[in-house]
Length: 95
Ligand code: FES
View 1: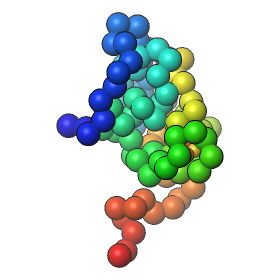
View 2: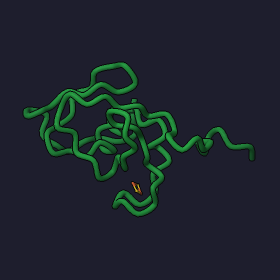
View 3: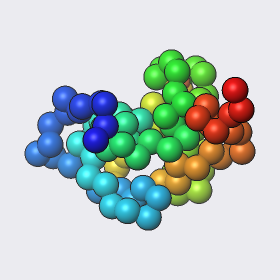
């Protein structure tokens, strides 16, 4: 269960594929919000600003690197949440 809860309408949705699994996203909701609400954020969980500045929410959408916080799915996209820049995620870094 995710700590994040979406306030977007669940009536008008589009469907995308995230790491091989289908995910229904409220139309107009950012990809980052959808991933966090679903608990499937992967590399995007390392987000910081949520306004497109820090580049820490990077994922691949249809093979292209995108900032998940600014990307709004249209439906049909394939999302890969592994780190596109190869960096270690916070929970993988040595302390
Ligand atoms: S969270 Fe900072 S660019 Fe997306």
